[in-house]
Image (tube, rainbow, N blue to C red; front, side, top):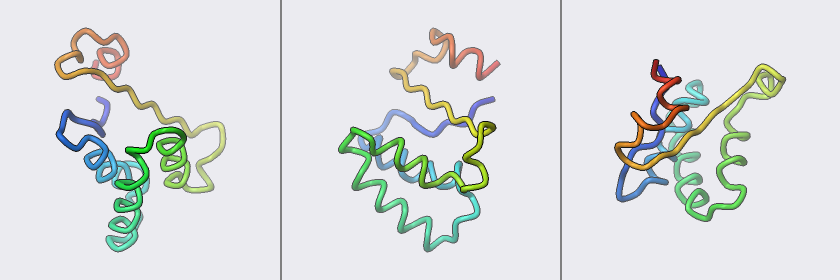
Length: 91
């Protein structure tokens, strides 16, 4: 089953900023995680290359080979049952 990194929220980028470090770099110390989360909360709402840059920064250098794949799928609330990618990931 796929991990949920993003949920409907009044502050969706804050939620994503808090979830990403724990999912992609669980080895971060609590201090480093808090610092990186604050950085993400500032950068992610700006769009552009912010999300790919944040993800790239969290992936350890030894995982940047061909075997490192990250898939983020976003849909509207309640669309999970109708979204073919999410249906396959949750199967």
